[in-house]
Length: 154
Image (cartoon, rainbow, N blue to C red; front, side):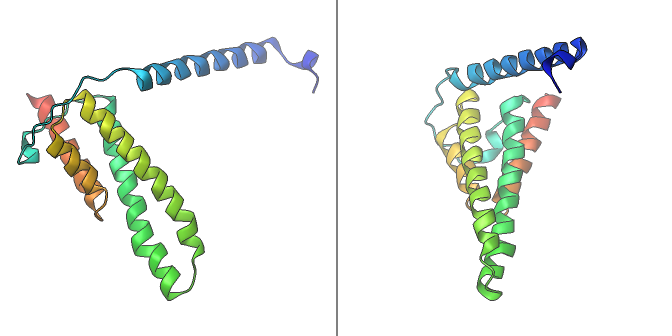
């Protein structure tokens, strides 16, 4: 297919897609480089006091917690037993890096959300520690979802 045989509609559509890609890139860049408000260093005794407004970082954290929890469970409940009992280490080699990336994404989104919502240090540490415990990501997602819902009702 030569360049002269491309229809003007196709060229216009491709130019529109390229423009959207640049717009998304600038949105991501601006979000990533924005200066979040400082969060306090008070330690709270319970997670019940924390409220999270419904916004993009909180929703992203809920999904990241679920994904991180799922990869941890797959790694611990399927891949590691297959490695040791069936001598099949390939699944650990596949799921290990996937879980590592999921954890890094979870930690990054957690820090961003904590900074934007002025979480105290105790809550931040509990949410980060929950990622190390099997099913902890699911408890974190449920906690955040419940507090988002409570905030909407107020």
